[in-house]
Figure 1 (spheres, rainbow, N blue to C red):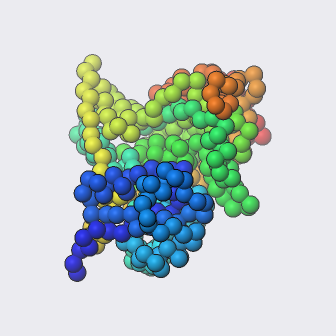
Figure 2: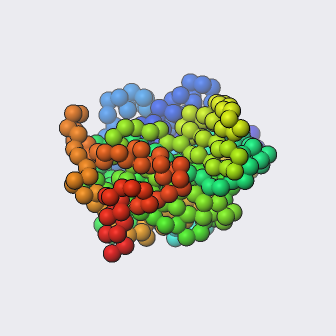
Figure 3: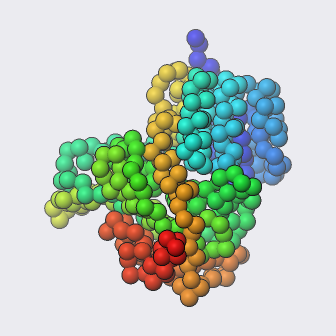
Length: 385
């Protein structure tokens, strides 16, 4: 079969993170990647800027209509979490391979059903964990295999970002655990910091996880968590602890730290920077990443070629999502331990000291309730009660 000269690609969901995908398709086309935008599906009209980026491609409110008109080789799904499975399957059933944003589904049962249904279509599905396309991952795994830091004691992860009230007002599903009775699971661990969990599991090479202990907190008036942590043991026996917040008093770009008996490795997975600390010496290296759309284009042109992040590779992550979904409701950070920053265009909840706390949790493989944080101790007790 002759490979197509350029793979027609449609984007489902152009607002929010979909804007990044719109720009990324344009970037790839300019860079000479054999891919081009062929259509957009969204229930809301495009802005003038989005239309300028999209050109004169067709825009529809129903994916089925767009698939009939365009017959794309790739469908990028960047829509609310609880709509992922239906849209991905619709595209695959029409003969399109899929780039599906993370998390692939809000529940483990839905994930298993999606995997089964997609297998029946014979189409490829890449999940949008861009950090898993980084060459830093095989580099770190190679260091561990060579015993660079001795025996692995555990993997910690931390991240602290600042998100104001507009972040939760951007869509009806934002900051929700469910919407109209349908699971959404849009919390700090499962959406903005999902890469931290997925990357930690990928570094470990885990194909599954055991029981996870989860603590969820909220400083914002939302249903889901904006500050949270978990600790689990992977199928390989590795302890993984993750602590994150969207209510930071200072920002901490997310990172992993692999603790060993003779040193440690710090991975800042967004820029692909690896810091190896051992024997009193520090070595820092930078590693590029392969764009996941480009990787999927290569598979479309060479059917059967392995993907960087196939759906099956995200099952362990989905086990963590399920643990978060089934965890106790988030405990409110008491008013005495939070403040409101009104210096920007929108108010922002801040938990003083939380950036230091998530770093300490990653360093000690600890839960927030195990640190000297009165709001976390109280919150954990409330959640258990």
